[in-house]
Length: 489
Image (cartoon, rainbow, N blue to C red):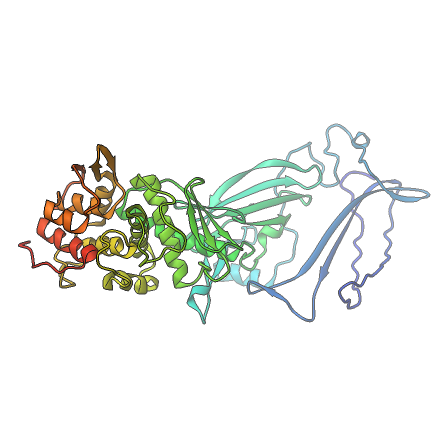
């Protein structure tokens, strides 16, 4: 038959079916002569017992195509399509008469829906020939008992033109969702081309591991049709990605910035963790320590990113310094308390404030504090750093308030020398650098096993820096004693 010739379409309705049922349907189409024909079967299923996934109704659709050679004695499915039957100037596929591999858009053929007509009439769309914006969303379950559907904002989108018969890509292009999670889709140029798209969960310092994207396919004409928001991506990954981008932004606003970090929501793991050897954060997606939508999840995400910042931006990150089961109050090594204390302080500074209030309260009240173990508890280091940056005179022992950037600059450059070796892992070293030198009396009283012969740091002290005020803060938070007010101000 001539290229571009179309045959009548047969449309059939079938009976109601149950799972496992099969149905055999026969139809006939009059053909003009022997030759190759493309047979297309599209089946749509509607269930009386409606199902939903992520709040969207499930609709079954199957699209099957076969090449058939029809002769006078009957048709048979071919294993190989013989392109030699067509002139060299034509692409060996039915469709418009056109040169090989040239692609152009055709006017929309589908009838307008009521929603399309209303959108044009109301000015939401300029023309029915304009592609309808697509929106990517996820569900925020942190707002229980009333979850909120939120847009996936400023995420990269890749759309690729793909020949579904030759399995050949003709290239693609990148764009991004806007603040409302929307982007303009590309349109498939002809009926046997497909637009394959994906919205990736990366940007703002976070690169999500698998499953990391929402993927879809659109066929000719579908780009002009309104569609419900996409929510096929792993919802927990989309939520963690969005929340952690805010954590990264808050961290970079006051602390030295690090490069992108890989993040993965993992199922079947016991605890969330920063894996320094892979520069990757794993967030527990289930189990007793699930760390996705809850307040604990917000704390864990900001805490683990604090380790990543410590490792790549502040330096001298000591991995494996803690024993199993460490927490706020366990007595650990100086390196463990220093590392975990900073990570918890980082969470208080960068996590969603409304969801971190209880954790900030632990630091402010020095819960789990023990005397006689100065610098050996996570809560001591976290409380010290918090008192250095929160409001002055908000507590009886706290006379100081310095920028977060100053704390970061001290941590990135503070070193103490012990037995000829320079080291940075310890709350006592932080006290030494923030106070600009400890007295022999204080070191013997609080850190008798850590003799320091010298120290150095390159931060620029704020104009309101006060040696006595810093001393009061670290002695209270690590030593437990309330010193007399210092002459600050």
